[in-house]
Image (cartoon, rainbow, N blue to C red; front, side, top):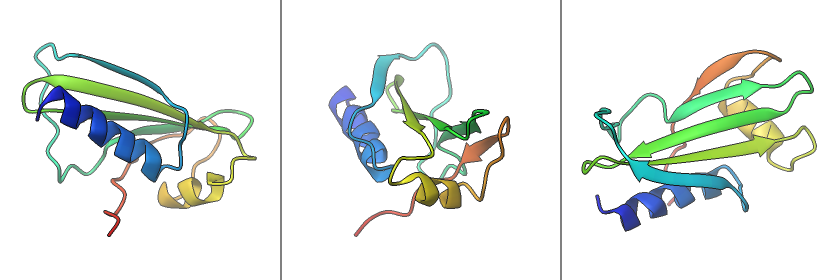
Length: 105
């Protein structure tokens, strides 16, 4: 997948999480495996002591490009409950894998 396609995939995932502004970086891979589209997890989520959900997502292309995005959901965020439900619940200090979102049609 070309770098342009990788960036588009990261943006699509961020939009799926209801994100408008995200911190995103793209870099060359350093001998890291490519994540298959059917991967059981697309990243990790943690909950801070104040209940804020922090979601770190990674996409990797077959050419070795890597894209990372961090999305932060304070408890007042409009999509907070949706994200919490998608994660199957989360407690302060807990860390969980993020399952892929179902594809939108």
